[in-house]
Length: 177
Image (cartoon, rainbow, N blue to C red; front, side):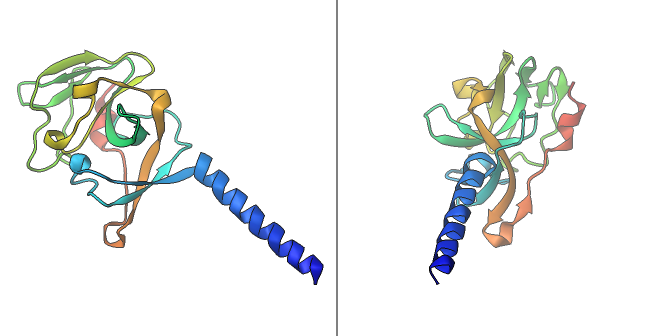
């Protein structure tokens, strides 16, 4: 009987330790607190974040330590070495001179940017923006973020169940070199 209790306690503790390690180093959960990523992510959505993602790429939705020290979620528009600019003659953001077609994720009542900018992103840094640009405080306001501040890439909306979906990188970024 004592052996069975010891085994149960050991297995329970092992399960808790494994769950904590997975949460700390492999995957995490993030709650969407604002409308800055609408319509891709809505206030109250919960996403799974892959912490083993590797380097962030253009188009990824990433969670990072934000400018105010809080966890923040935005879309990567440009990476170190890129030049990001707004806007071309058709009012599109360009990365390295290539226009980005944002119709698949940009909020339908919004525009790429209300202000003009041209920035060369330093190595080791990322230019991030919300999908609902008029409701987003992002790199246009605060500058780039360090790649080392990225916690992980959002991969799945899991709550509410009615919005469950896999989050993928838009193909428009495949054209940028």
